[in-house]
Amino acid sequence: MTIGADYSRQGERATGPLTVLGLETSCDETAASVVRLTPDGEATVLSSVVHSQIDDHAAYGGVVPEIAARSHVEMIGEVTRRAMAEAGLAYHGLDGVAATAGPGLVGGVMVGLSFGKAVALARDLPLIAVNHLEGHAVSARLGEKVDYPFLLLLVSGGHCQLLEVRGIGDMSRLGTTIDDAAGEAFDKIAKALGLGYPGGPALEKLAATGDGSRFDLPRALLGRKDCDFSFSGLKTAASRLAQTCETDQQKADLADAVQSAIARQLGERSDRAMKAYAEDHDHRLFVVAGGVAANRTVRSTLEAVASKNGFAFLAPPMAYCTDNAAMIALAGAERLQQGLTSDIDVAARPRWPLDEARALSDPAHKPGRKGAKA
Ligand code: KG4
Ligand code: ZN
Image (tube, rainbow, N blue to C red; front, side, top):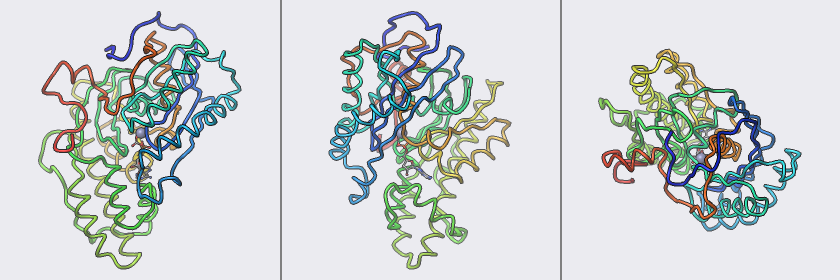
């Protein structure tokens, strides 16, 4: 496996179960969780506490970084105390502390990472800096035992990527968005429809009462052979149409059309990725993770595409689709299992591509998004 610049091998592979405290503060959830991982990959969530800041940001229609960082400072101690209490553990019962070190709103990331460093120093525990995306990538393993490798669609508010996941820290990207992430499109269109924040769940609820068949929304990147995504054309077209909706029924119809269009594009690109992946993999498992994986239409569309291509389909339990700390604790435990830990001076990073090793060694393989918004 690839050891990224942020890890060093401090010890041998662990032979017994590991219990890790995870901390997540990269966006608008302050979360702490304790997860136990056995050597054969069985994960048990002993506690998972998530404090959502939705009420703090609702008036502004989106996450305000300064408000988020302050709220994380206020909540991280209490959220961690609750996670330890619900797990029934004292700090000496832990084997390590994992904290999200990026990518995300760096003011918030610094809060969780600094808190994690303080716990690690005070309790003499190893620290594992975790890439938030790697947390989403392993999140399906919280629900049941899942073996590597698998094909992953990571679809959240900030990211939309197809990845071949061979193991922790060993992933390569098959496709990414050239402009917006799918969750971003859900959120912005929901805002144009006058729905609250976060937009994805609100739009899904409204779409349930609509019929989008009369709308003809733009379909991006048709005819291209790659696995990239584009949602900005859809976002602009739907936001304009939202201004013309006069009744609640019209809004519901548009919401249904938008949800179907996003699900369809996710399905089309995943279909291409499955066909490429199947060429050199006999074990065919497709996993969808990230906040948008909570959407039922998205799930059922992807499940149908997977079944058509002979892939088993898996999505994390709903609670582990959106941001949480159990996925961070698990990613940390998987690294710790391999003896990989971080230095206490590891920095918080606003950007941190998942397939960093490839990005560094292959200049043609640019990390993160492609296109104008990269
Ligand atoms: O993974 P996540 O909690 O945070 C990021 O890492 O971005 O994902 C949040 C995103 C938001 O854009 C939110 O609107 C979207 O996931 N989302 C949904 C649903 N639940 C959350 N989108 C569509 N339908 C949902 N039910
Ligand atoms: Zn996330």
